[in-house]
Length: 294
Length: 254
Image (cartoon, rainbow over all chains, first blue to last red; front, top):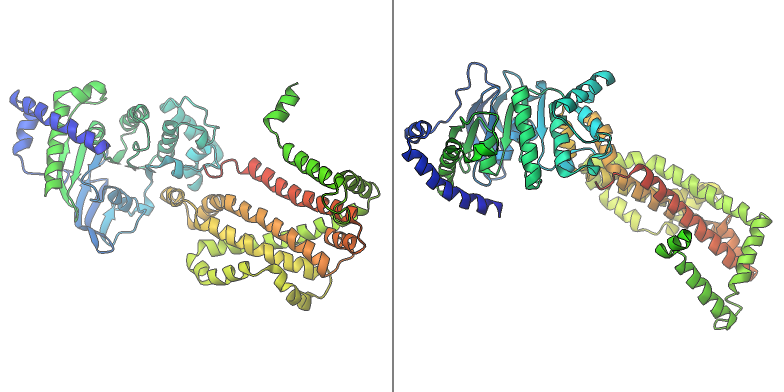
């Protein structure tokens, strides 16, 4: 259902982007001629280096020699056709599912030696209902052996930073969906991760909550500069939050293209109607549609 | 006034009152022979009398003690075994048939065997009741561990928790609601077996013994009174476990 609406919106946006092209948007003019990018210009020390990644499920080959360098401090949205393994990619990177071959290194280290944060799509299943919200946020710190005082100080810091307006002594199930997902995000952020993975964190939320959490997430990113990988099924959201949109092909999955989103931050509702934003989105959509048709 | 309203809102008393009235009418109208059904008022008076003279309390205490002993043995042996079976699905699968087989075997069929092993003392009664409760506890605990939500386990793992930590901090809590279902069923099973054992294996006291004794000497009022008291015992145990569940497992299923 949602996908349908996205597509209708999108076809209108293609018209808008054509208009933007007429008016001579420099970004679009260059990008429409340049060859698709297969990798990031990740700089000398990328946050994550993926080399020759292999993964199959039964007879289905998902990744077969996948290479990518993920730049440090970027917000990257992962977008692609159904079943191309968007979520699988971040699950492989975060070590939630084992790889069949290849290598994934976080600045030279394996995932076990790196502090990462992971925000699940289903916050209800990911939070611990036998602990209150505060203890949920503290849990990764407890695992790391932080003292009680340090843990409390860290949570207080997060609460102040993100203006948490609800009582953290409540259990997760006593909070609204948006509040629960915010608790999940804070829990992922608590140990100061080097990389944050977000697997469709908005898809179980209503639109109002989605907007709210989206803003908080942008604030998190602006304040911490932590490398973020967001899997999204909503192109507008993917573009809105990202520095770069990583577009994937159908299986076996490769990088279709990498689209830079140069709209200035902080972004807001006006950004979404800004010609540059609209053009970027249209370009991403075009690449996506080519991949789906292929 | 508000008390009366509360009684109307939660009409739990309607059922017992209805039973009492039907019983009373049936007995007064002699729909059923008084040789089989005494009137409710004198039955309750008998129950009261047995409580005042303390005779029923001794039997009540005997049955309660045996049931709790059997339950304690079953829980102490059942919860750890259930956890081990549940956390290693391969072990569970290889024992599933055996567990299901014994779970489907009426515990009473094992009486002679337990008599052979333990003799006719308390051990055989408690043993067979504990065995019956143990199976249902093992089954439910294992099931609870196996059905721990995978996302929670993954969440703990991605936060860097070790296997042991995940087990203590996540799996244990995840399995608790189902464990409590097992414990509640276990105590009910234990009571059933203890009552039957008291009737047929023999015991110096106990509600089973009391009921069968009353029946043997045709003291119908005492028999009915003892059945009601036994019912209260079972219901009370159930209520106690529900209370524990509702107090400590408010988060279950959330």
